[in-house]
Image (tube, rainbow, N blue to C red; front, side):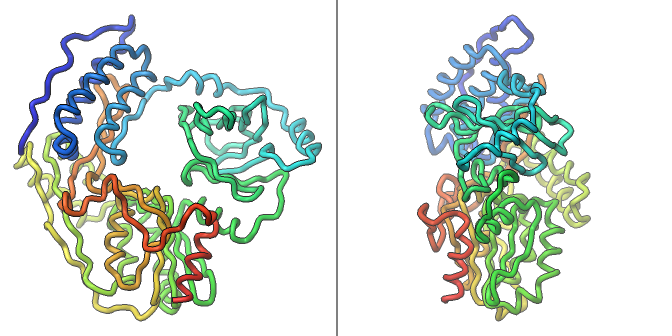
Length: 473
């Protein structure tokens, strides 16, 4: 394997008057990523060593000016953006956000007085009692922002009176639309808000779906269905009409495989006796390829070809295989695959190795007569295994994709993680590179839908739009 000569950037380390040193963290990040990430070499080959060297120099100057863990995290995360937008990341393991600490205090919030205030409101506003996930919050306007005070929480890390998120001043174009505080109270910036009538609001791209509890108006059935589909954490089945059924799969995580298989098995007779099927994977960011196995016999019309991938073999990377042996969600067959793979990879340290087939071809004994038409709802959040599923599904004559272009994060994949020596940061990087490169690259491009749904059609109408097209075919 060809290796690049990487110029040393760290002649000395500076101290900020504490034990934390951003330069040493950068040195660890740079060395670990260059030696272990399966996409590093591919990116530098495409962008050029000169551009990479210039990027390193610019980042190093910012590293030397970083005065806190939070500032260092921002700079190091910016360094990673050079390589790709998915299957990569850096987590800060300490709460370095002053804003989060300030808003995490328990405020003396008077819920009774707030409810009286709501009753006095003549016009419908964002103020109200809202529910999402594990939280019920009181969204109150204070100055030019709205703050969401916890009313009830099943998360023990959050108490009544703490601020869960802030809707920032819409007139401030330099600020994210939402500052959301995660389970560990760290701040996450969100740039999109979608309003669905008066009772539902979506923060980010399906990140948070919240519903108004007080004061509530009647929502249309389409909006109610969309919120139900978007907010579910588990796969579900619905009968949309006499001729169309729907399966919603929010994630392909390996841990959800049993749930996906169970939903398909429970409703298989209905699916196989209905003209049309909608598979809704909007917001599905991936998981494990085995999780969508029960869908393939339903959509199958001809052999499904899947192009393999190469693993970058290093001591750190190969240790993931050992972790699989302890995974309770892995079958004995899968554990044997991991053990065999570990033995092969360890014989080729420093090289790209394919431990499976270059191309696999999957066939089934029969083509199901029904459903005749299958529409898969896709959006820009679909990546990784979700995109791998779409590559398989598109090989069926029955299948059409409806929605918008996917995320384009598939070619460099199979994420792993490792902590910095100080424990301050966790690096998330990738172990494999697809053999589709360069002839059918997905990264940075995405998968195009067959039926593009433009922004004029509200998100909650995508299902009915797809239903009408399928039933008209």
